[in-house]
Length: 146
Image 1 (tube, rainbow, N blue to C red):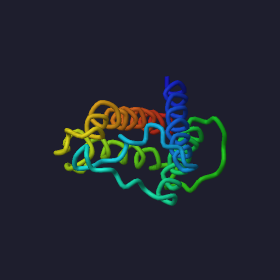
Image 2 (image 1 turned 180 degrees about the vertical axis):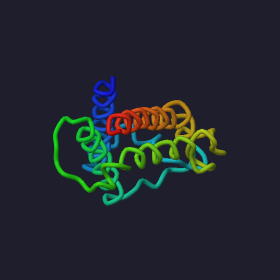
Image 3 (image 1 turned 135 degrees about the vertical axis):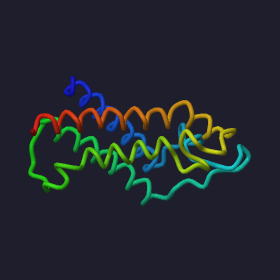
Image 4 (image 1 turned 90 degrees about the vertical axis):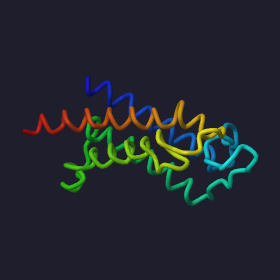
């Protein structure tokens, strides 16, 4: 079961990373509703090259880390990362699902924009599901090591 969860998560992170690399090289398809604004008439100020590169590489690194923890390959990593890495990643995604109470997450105030609707339907649920699946992997990893 955890192998299947790991494979699904690796595919999801590879896909999300690929989308960000696509935007990095200038692609703009589907980019109008992925950045929060106060209303639909405001044109979002898209992040620059460096933030997009950081997110793309971060998502790819998370996918590789999950592959590593699933045993698909081995490289030595610091013990702190080995022990707490999945928990940290799960926390990040669950916090993203909860949101910052303004533009992001289930508890946002601004829900009427294109981004707000997409966030409620797709982005926040995806983050919550990712967080829960990673908690399952983390719990299984803890159980195996004891």
